[in-house]
Length: 371
Length: 200
Image (cartoon, rainbow over the protein chains, first blue to last red):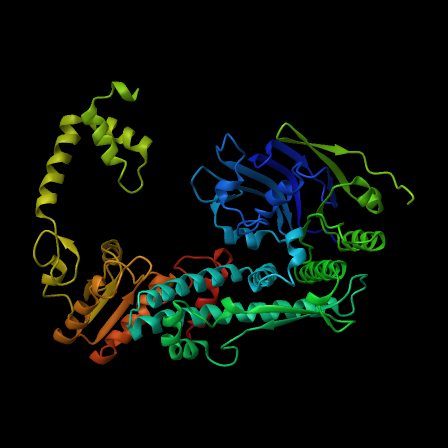
């Protein structure tokens, strides 16, 4: 199966890269180099080919290479099930991020419909012990990968809720105004909840019966307050309490995601660091399998420092599963030997830092070294 | 280049650049165009702008922009008084009029509700609308607001505010545009069109 893939990638004035052009052939990619060489910056550039602020959640202005700060641009040829497309995204200094698809101005939401990109980054290693916001974001990225309308619903919900919060802070007492905003929030909340629940269902189905070396994670959404019943009625009832708090206290923006290491029956937060990492890898692979089944093409995977916390056996299993999926996984690691078991099945690049500038070179495929 | 351009002309360019659709470069080009056609275009334009700037005013009834106390639409005895079409901006009123299909009268809100931007029901001419509906014997209020979160919030608010007047409150349909192809529609529009389907 041929998946979604990045072909030629051009990165200009983006973080540590000044002018970079990589030609990728759709196979997995291993990028190696020392800390601070600019490996993750490359993954971040690719992550901006999907809606949102990318895998570091950076402001567009922070992505520009310094000291020039003349704005940045990422351009990529993208292979999708319906053909090849040219995607450009950039931000001028002080301006919002812009997108063009095949030479025409497009929205970020349009990127979500064109290309599917999933990522796993080291900051997610603490996902199960972090604040709920990080897990909600993780859940929303999964939902977005299945349902591109998730982005619009999230924006609509956020917009109406920020307006409601303003009314609460200003102690406005206009029931009709609240009711109008709560009706918008309820509409968007219904979409958000349905998408999240369906996404978790898809992951469960993709994990069940899959031939994988990674442990099964049982996910559960905790909707928090107002879980059962009519959210609009809950918000209408709780206006006085919300006004005292100065914000909306119930709704999908307060949901949390729980995970259990299924075979051990142990909450993910209590598992070892390595087990937590394995659970995350398992979820990303399940997400990729489910998308591949839906769309006939595996998503692009961005796996930053994925080899950390995985033993040699699990690393080999990961590469095998990626290749079986036909996914273009772009992976980084500090040492080339971490990708030995990928063998000749992928492309390898080395990144070095030369006086604050990242230099990337394609290297010959790593020799299979016996351990 | 800039330091050789007289200050008055620079000031004109700076003013032009504040118009919608114009930036510094296109403003410079437009001003140069006017300067080369001073008699044929620039002077008549300046006179027309001065005249309209003096005469222009908001219609006391509907909020349309015209040159009299009551705009021609509100003053036209041939327009039906039983129907009021509510729009966000004067540009929306003009768009409705270009279509030439609505024979009732209008009410321009002047925007949409936004707590974050400090746009309140009172600043939107909503009380004036409620008064008009009661005073003019209006039987139907048609909400022709933009299909945005703010537009939908405002429509919801208006429906509530007008409930006591007894007038029926309707809104424009959302769906497949005339001459449009399904293949080019986004998912949200297709969903709205399907929900608003009708029997043939």
